[in-house]
Length: 256
Image (cartoon, rainbow, N blue to C red; front, side, top):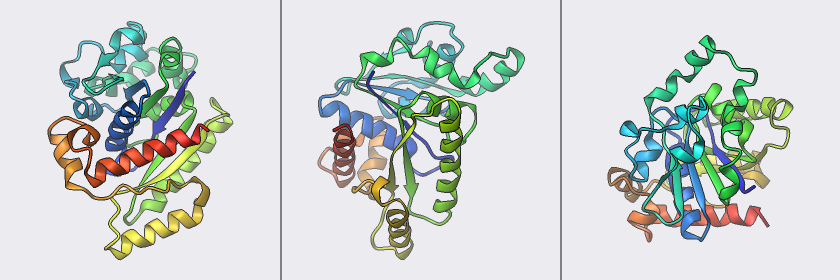
């Protein structure tokens, strides 16, 4: 079984999807076979790697409902050894479906669905939604570790406290071996006092668990999203791409 990393934070706009896309692409470019799972009904992870999530016939919803095996929903991308399973707005109906048709272990649906597929990859990267509900809990219950993006802005620490509380609950329940992969400072601008203060506070509180690299605000990242490409492929020499390559190397070092 390879590494399974959930990208999670219930606060929106902190760079979860951007990180999931570009960490997946960077790991692939560094020679790893990677599967990107979209657990967010917004479906943006698919678009970020050139997959039309809205029109996909087989998606994460069908996988979780066991309408077909996970391997049938895998879509290859144009970016090296990077595959993905897309999601779209239909995924938001899962909770209502489970209310009408209860299952014994609702937080283990993803783990059960991915049992045969996950061992085929070096890394499985999961893009979680901006909430700590059913979908995120499924991701955390399946993962070996969780990477927490922290935007360098006001209210960042409140979001960190909430995700840490949820991780503790999952560790006490369905996934005792879940670890923190690391805190990732995103949208960092050293020219602003607030950004510097948040970065300093995170590194002080979580020194051993904070990645050395910070993801800067970078125009190339925004442009790559419009082109439906990872920035690591669209403009690999940009500061944004280089930061994600550094992140991928740190993740690889965590395996050693």
